[in-house]
Amino acid sequence: MAETRREPIAVIGPGRVGAPLGRRLGKAGWPIIYGARDHAREGLAELVADSGPAACLMTPPQAAAAARLILFAIPWAQARAAIASLGDLTGKVIFDATNPLRYENGLEFEVDVPHSAAELIQEWAPGAAVAKAFNTTNFRIMADPTVVDGPITMGVASDDAAAKLTAASIVTDAGFHFVDAGPLANAHYLEKMAAFYITFFFQDRPDAIEFHLRPRPNNKLLFGNGPAA
Ligand SMILES: NC(=O)c1ccc[n+]([C@@H]2O[C@H](COP(=O)([O-])OP(=O)(O)OC[C@H]3O[C@@H](n4cnc5c(N)ncnc54)[C@H](OP(=O)(O)O)[C@@H]3O)[C@@H](O)[C@H]2O)c1
Image (tube, rainbow, N blue to C red; front, side):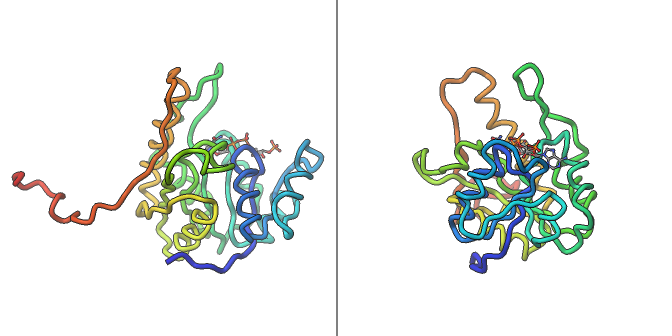
């Protein structure tokens, strides 16, 4: 079901999430345009060189203008300003990896958003199609999902069927198990999944989890409020 056409992806910005995803996707054949504010930043030239033959570096607004597909990986506190800085996003597809979180004293806290960060981004960029993706695992896993045993699910929530189809290709090429997470409003649940996932790091747990969702073939029999058989 995943489409195979690989068109340029603007990665805004090339941080802990954007860099490993850009590197993997670039090697999988997606032309990567990193949108970075500081081109002299340490490691950026090496990142571009290691992100496939077509990878290049631009400013964030130049990158967004040059690609229809945008991977948005910006800390929540800067997300609104970053979207505003990208210019007119009409017709773009935004893969939103953000989580509404803030760091304080080495800990991470949830930030109240009306329903989800993804829906706010959709409000800030009304002419774009937003797809929530890549928010429920850690950046180190994004660098190489095979470091853990078994498949890792990446849920994608969007109201735009074409955006979801493209997301399925990208998620699969990044090494994850694509799951259609429903409409954009379900980004609320993906963002809560991320918050839950992160508690394992901040509650001194020696273990950790990854999400692997699987289909339930006899769905109809098990849903509903009737008496249990
Ligand atoms: N870290 C994870 O494991 C993880 C996993 C899943 C989802 N997420 C979510 O993904 C998002 C990014 O997290 P991260 O850990 O990758 O953050 P990060 O390492 O701090 O990287 C953030 C990137 O955003 C850029 N940036 C910040 N403000 C900007 C602006 N106004 N305009 C353009 N670029 C700007 C930074 O560029 P400069 O270098 O110029 O500052 C940097 O490249 C967050 O919302 C986070 O919650 C993180």
